[in-house]
Structure formats: C-alpha cells, structure tokens
Length: 153
Image (cartoon, rainbow, N blue to C red):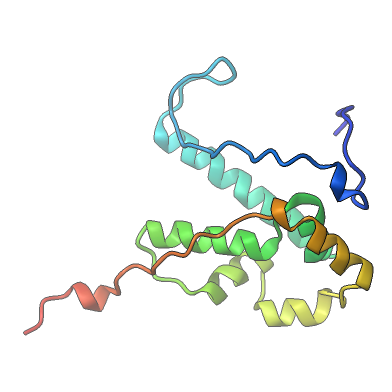
C-alpha cells in the first residue's frame, strides 16, 4: 500500500536474502511502537487480523495457493495448519479438515476443484527456488479427547 521499497521480482528468488524473521512473541509489554495492551486486548486484535486475512483471501479466488507460497512463503493451507495448532493449544478438538473449512469457507476438496488451477512448470520451478523461505509447521499432537480425561468407572 504505497510503500516504496525495493523487492526482488518473483522470477528472481536468488535476489532474496537468507535472513530468517525473528520469532514472533506474544507480549503485552509496551514498545516504542505500541502501547501496553492486556493479553485479552492483544488476542482480540490478532483474532480480528486473522479474520480479516481469511475474509480477504476468500475474496481473492484469482490468487492460487502456489502464488501465495512463491511470493509470501505461506498459503491458505498454512493458515489452516496455524489455526489448527492454535485450536489444539486452546484445547479445542477440531480436525485439519475443519480448520481448512474455516479458512476456505468450504471443504478444501470442493475449493480446490473449483478454484485451484494446475500449476505450470514455471510456477513449480519458482516454488522450488523459494522453498527456503516457506513457512514451517511444527508437528504437534492433538489435545487429549474429552472422553480420555473422564474417570473410568
């Protein structure tokens, strides 16, 4: 949005740097750039940002996941995996398919059939070249089922 900074064209991934972003840490502490928030306020703002991003991507059916991966290093599937991880950390018992449905607004297979074109040879090459910059999804175990925590009688 009007930012004037140089950026490597998507067709030239070699121009990208190998800098890894600093891990994001939730903090309610004030910084020179933001006031002090309560954890609840910060979580509400972050939830609103996630919701806005999902809404925006649902409206951008012209942007395939492979282009999101090439340019941004993440895609709708990444959002679903992060949503799933957050749900599990909160003790919510949902599946990956349910997380995908939250992000896509419909079952993933349905969305893919209607909106995901076959990747071109050029896209696949660009995807491979940008792989070091793709988001990671640490493996995580689902929460124990509610039934597993009930005493056996």
